[in-house]
Image (cartoon, rainbow, N blue to C red; front, side, top):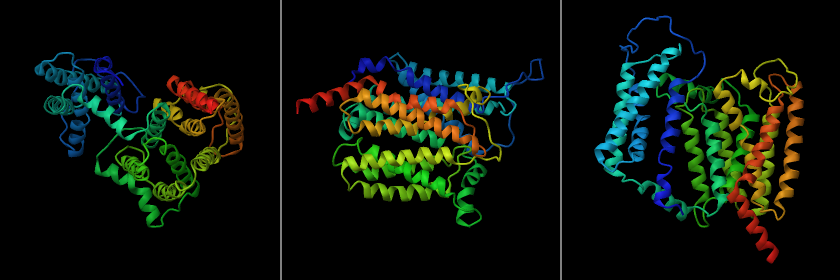
Length: 411
């Protein structure tokens, strides 16, 4: 258990992370930077006559957590100092980001946005002062962790996997509450329901197998007696709903149908023995990898194999690079599912499993030379190997596995 003093050492980390997310969302898509044509001093903020109420709400809401975190991170005990940190910190970050939008032709800086963002940060600071004394949230989260979740690094790593999958489903994480945007995100679902478009069975199969694999992993997160099925169902449903306000992440019929069938399969698998369920999860995640690698792309062109790591990614956008890293979550899941067996010779499993991942991914990438719209790349095979290794290099998890191996030898 961490002490309150240890928690204070990391009080700025949430501010930095959330501030970075705000910068990313405000400056998205982060390319096509150019110097403005006007070189003389001018009003950099333009007043917008057509005000969207959804934009007003969004600009306030996204800065409330920042104000809350700034007030929490303030080293001063004075409530006025915490209030000032939230107010001036939020206003400063908003001004900086609005100014940087001058150099992005796709973005429009606005004095109104600055005022709304500052108001949101102000509300967040007030919420912290009124409801949450410093340290109470941290201790509350720890108490929830101890009360409901299994102890140990394996459970924490499994929880991290679920978060990684949620990020992959909600990328690029840029919200929009505009009604037109929400309609666009629901179009694929409407077309499928009205039979204007057919279901893509391969994508539906990916969702089914994904839910089976992630559900198997979630069995090791909560303590015995907890409603794992309903907790996992609520989590998956929340992730699907979060796709709606995200730009460019439509909610498809394949996702809804695949998740529904996957949850039914997961409910049935929970009646089997743990070893058979884990083995089924491993087969399911291998199916996700194979189907994803063999699907055709959006063009009719084929590409030669790329032997230079990250050659195709260097010319792409930042979000494309992030998607590439997050997209290797199935190999992280595969590694965790193998670790749920608690192997008695983990180093041997690590090496032979890594060799199998590397050879298998190389073969699938090589085969993409004959699939239209795919870009065969050695980078994907390398990232898959790194994702497989990631849980094994996590020191607390390594120690936990060694402890399990010692107990097995004593028996």
